[in-house]
Image 1 (cartoon, one colour):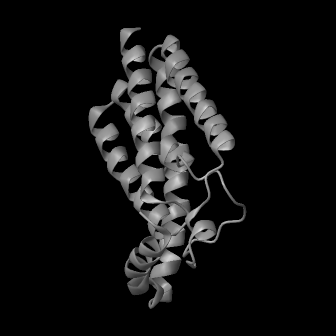
Image 2 (image 1 turned 120 degrees about the horizontal axis):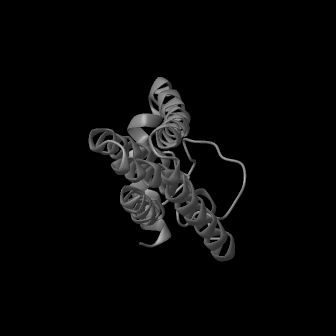
Length: 171
């Protein structure tokens, strides 16, 4: 999608939110709050692994950590611009810094943690996948990621988390 078309599309998404300052604040709080949910969910998952079978810690922490490192390295090498750098938009979520937009590390982490939960509790995994999708929408509406950034992060996150869960269930 070219920049001008994306600018128009983003403004269509953001205008209804921008006209309501309380909604913009809620978007920012939701973005930060969901990140906190995933920190807690991951800590609980690793605690569950310690309590049930410490061997499960290796794939649940190691595979996800390797995936996180790989995504971080790829982002750094690619250094793709963020929407507010490439397009003339005013993002709803203020972010310091530039580049490293593709893939979204927030989306990767959330989806990897959610998919890892399949090793412990399928209903929790499904609920977390829905919350991860909400985070991805927040990142796009906030103007800090293009849709392709969060989609790529989600796909890689599900693959990495799924692999971690699969390996944990083998132990």
